[in-house]
Length: 195
Image (tube, rainbow, N blue to C red; front, side, top):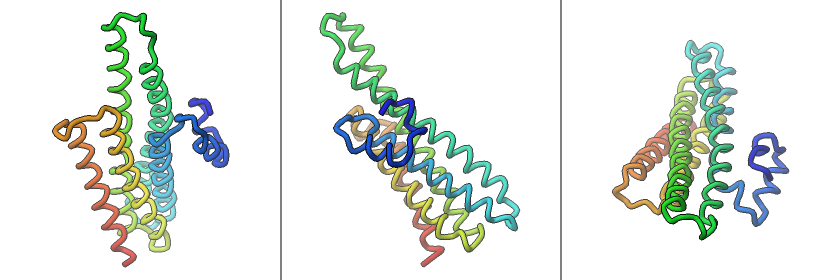
């Protein structure tokens, strides 16, 4: 599957592409799509909560997060492809040029999952708010959105650690861990609304 068709693919086409041996699209794209789906559920729950004064603003926030995470899913597939290509640069390139290109590609392959983790934490928080304040009939969807976003935050943070094999004291990894914790706490609050 070409990376520029990721979001235009049907669910069946996407699943078929994921099931091949081709590494693109991979886990980062899936995490991004999961965040987008969670944000879309937030949009639905907010729009169904017309009696809640903050429903329109919450729906707008959710829509912005959905669009952002969809763009990040596409970007992740593209950047990951560039990182894989950088590993296979010809040996005839000067060492400095090769190292610079590889370094740039790897840095991008960390920044996109980190941005996805941040978007996921925001969606988890928004969904927890909807579970508590939104239309009670939509509470289950809000809880699903929060739990899904929390899982996507954890997945994206895992990619931050893997993509550069960053050390535990790297500020990007510690930031990713804080996002995962915030998303997990939001999901736990959401789930308590149906306990």
